[in-house]
Length: 126
Image (cartoon, rainbow, N blue to C red; front, side):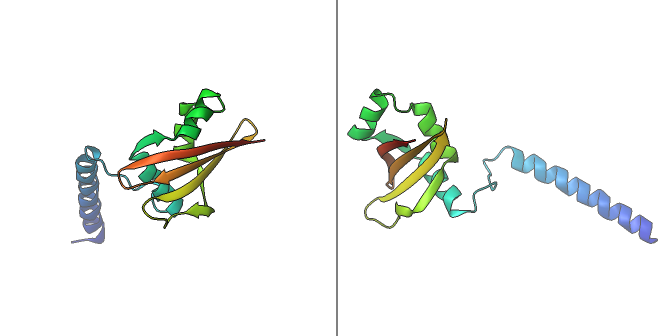
């Protein structure tokens, strides 16, 4: 058998394998994109839990410093500041997440517990 025939069989089998793989993985909830860094894992962990608001964060929401849509966006795409965070604090780790919006820096302090996350404080800096 010539090399060109073997290459054709190989590429044909490879193409069929890719199609089958795409078919089987399209329906499942597989995600491996952007979940490797510690920051991405923390944000994903917080977003999978029920978010509760403390009294001080509810006051900030009532004073219209930020809205809930902005908070959700920060919790998805913000930067976790590990130098200010206390991830090993028991029973719940505390994370500082910051993001810039409209030339202002918004800092969220989130207490990440096992079953829920509590938004402790919202700070807006110019």
